[in-house]
Length: 235
Image 1 (tube, rainbow, N blue to C red):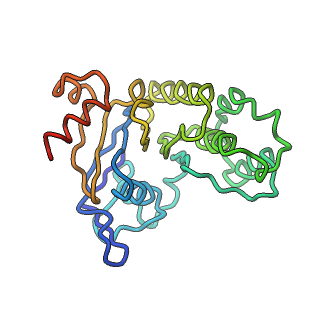
Image 2: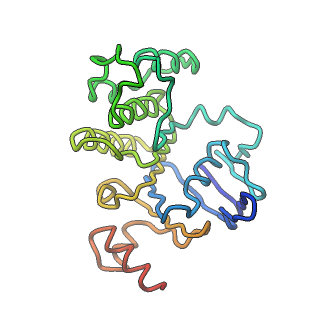
């Protein structure tokens, strides 16, 4: 579904991506993890067309994404920190995005209802807490029923109930056969969600494993412990 081939990216003298090659398939829920500055965000922005790699290629369903913006209509993106016009209300933001997208497909308003955001449609974005802004970002990511979901620290700032609602939604979409890519520092949040895990460091992919294989290899049930064991063996 998404294939990344030998991608390199430098910002000045800093090598941010070093010969990254990855394949993401339909029906997988993949965690992209690693320390700050490891290249996760640059990789995500490259997939979204927001950053152009210096070399290598990125393909969506067998076609290069270079110069083709339409593939992005099939991707729902939830940024770690959503930035919206301060003076617009929640309702205005959602309506504006609907008008921009002009989608003739049925909308997925599950999260809109589950988060009860309709009750807050008249609230201006500048008055919202970080958690409520995250809810708006989540609603927009899922709204157009995309084939691919890219979620950057999706539960950061959410209260426990909202976090659980979002996790249940992610599981439901995975079961529909969608590709879901999640970055997270909270490995405990991922145990029930992910099928594969990618660990990046210094712009390189250190490993890309199926969760079942990782647990079998380490004899650990918790992902965080399994990863810690793998990293100790490599150090």
